[in-house]
Amino acid sequence: MIAMMTNYQRNRHVVKICLCFTICLVIATFGAQVTSHGKGDWHPHKDLDGAARLANGRNDDDSVRGLANAVSNFPRALPRAPEVMENVIKDRVVRAEIAYRNGAHPGVLERDIVTLFNSVADRLGLPSYAKTSAQQIRVFRMQLALSLPAFMASGMARGNMKVGESIPETMSPLQAAHLIDSLLNQKVINPEYQVEPAEWEKSHLPAAMARIQQMQQLQASRQGGNHSQKAELHAFHRRRDLYNSLLQAGSNLRFVDAMDLVDQSFTILKIGR
Image (tube, rainbow, N blue to C red; front, top):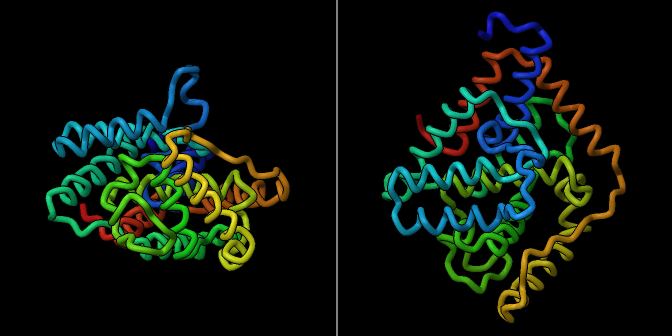
């Protein structure tokens, strides 16, 4: 089938692989489009946390795969890769997740996610604001943990988290997949994350920490819901430039090189075959 593709079709598939996976390990598997669900009563956070509760209670192949599917179906701004590619990658991540839950896999480190983002950004020649930092990963992970307590907070030292305190650096492969996917999504659509890591820590870290405290207070008072604050839509050109850079990088990348990046991404995150 691949041999019969036009150059345009082939480039589109390679772009999807680069965009949705090599930038962030498993985006090819976990890059569902925002418009993929049109039902007004569909709540992705509720579905994802529900799947996590089931998996946390059972830890069997079916429940873990159900959690992987919930991660896969979580809305994203970027397109998905071809189904055959998704299935191969998803199987690999599910195996790693089950091994992690059985104590046979060490998990994914925050620092390795930083390495993955930054090394792939360098290799593909992406703008410097496509990169991340240890501080950004830690704070963003905490925000996700408060939004998805059954899923992303699982394995953290304690429920009443403070930034940089008593939180292990390790997370499960599926937690890492969702964090990477979500952060890339922010890099593409949210001006707050379209700045260099050092500038983000200087200009946006205080506000991010304040939001974490607010979310904690809302949860503690049992008045909290899913609150999201919209960033002002300034610096739109950075969204356009990053997206165009990803497209250009994908168009210039051969299929075999894209697959090599996939393997390198798994290697960086210490996820075996």
